[in-house]
Image (tube, rainbow, N blue to C red; front, side):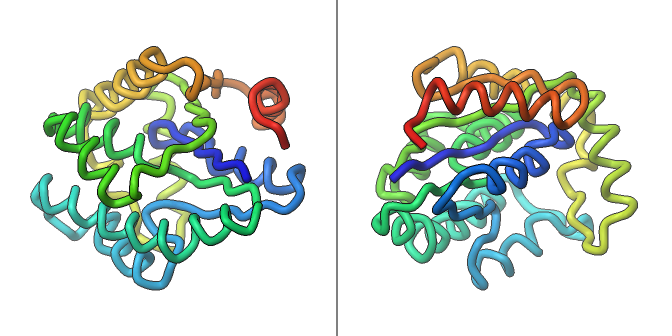
Length: 205
């Protein structure tokens, strides 16, 4: 069993890379956060709706509730079956967005993450990195064409997204054995070549 998570700022292209990985890896379960179960998907609709005005701590608890349901209903059962699980965002997103972005206490966030997941940790976390202004422009352009209103985080200013990016890079520097930073600039196929090379070097798939 192998658990891989993909992280990055808005517009970093991680969802595209996840689809490409799913085509290459056998016996794989692809999932996402927030979401992944019927209950978690309903929480996702609240969290990402631009019409919602959510207190930062309330936002944190909604993410934790969604994650708990996701882990118990989807991720742990798949890992127990020996499958490769690839998840679009996981606990590191809470540290980056609610910790570095919203400036909530990181130690409390780590404790809540451990409680919600029973201390489940990915074997490898890929952080897709590019300048925050590039990612935000991409994300806002994408949202104008999307059928669902899921752009609440894209409404935050550039300083917020800069803190999120810096947070991801700080996490990667703190534990280079678990994290790998992928240069997310350039064409999707170029980014995938970098991503696939890292996977071949780092995890037994």
